[in-house]
Image 1 (cartoon, rainbow, N blue to C red):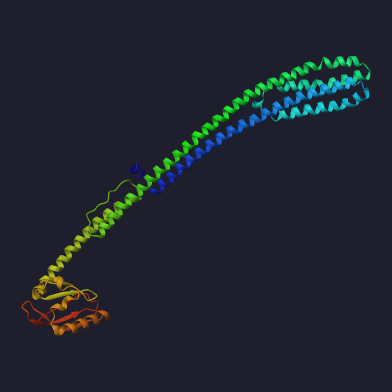
Image 2: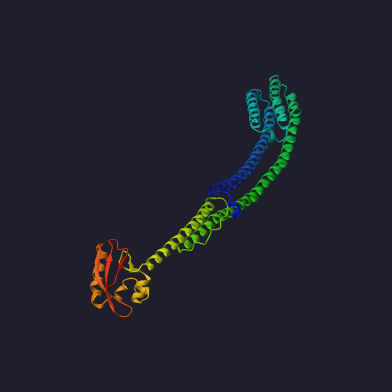
Length: 377
């Protein structure tokens, strides 16, 4: 997977990783919103069905109340009171009918309890005002017996129909309530299992992408660091493994090519240095070189043979070990002063030969202090 990830650029793989995570989170959010909408729809459905059932019960209770009030007016045999209460009863019937229409007008068609509920209520409530008019007409002629018969016959079918309507609405409400409860429970179960599943999948995908992308970046970087460390130690033979076609792969190829060119350059320098050493050793003179700080770092073979001392015993400031005891302090002091001031230096000093004899040498130091030579007499 790491090699597959390395086939695209670092910017592209990071972008794709973030996009994939955002897509998974968006899917989880979409599912949550969908299930929330399902539950909200079912809750609204339950609310509207309860409103319908309560309205049916209210209309039935109002019908019973109307019957009771009408019956009391007839039993009282008070014409003036009946004529006074009749308009009030008509207004109450009109208000009750408008309330029923308002309630059912706000119900969505899919949430109607039973298609026959509203027409039945409208029929009952539409016929009741005529009953009030009939009562008022009979009372005005003083026919109280006819009023008693009128109260018993027409309202009983309405009450029976209204009671049956309450029963039907209650049964239908129970069935649809159970169905809505099942829908809500199913939505809750889907939410309960889907969201943790997608959340877990998102975490796993993010972890895999993070590991793969991190490894695809850190591994080449580690190889580059190791290659750079080896190059700093002069090990030019180490080549970095190139994987993929991203920026780090291009950098690795450039590093490998640079290493090859540096190795060739180093080998050329070594050959040039060896040729220069061969030339210096072939010169019929005693030559030594000091760095800019005055420390000896090279002597040619003729000087080594002359003093018969290993080069490492002379390097640094140890050249004084082969100088005459009387010249050492002066030589060292003048050399240090010349190095400190950065000026040219020329003096004569006696150097011990291999057989123990001392010979005079003319010592020269350039202004930059790069090298010096000596000749004996």
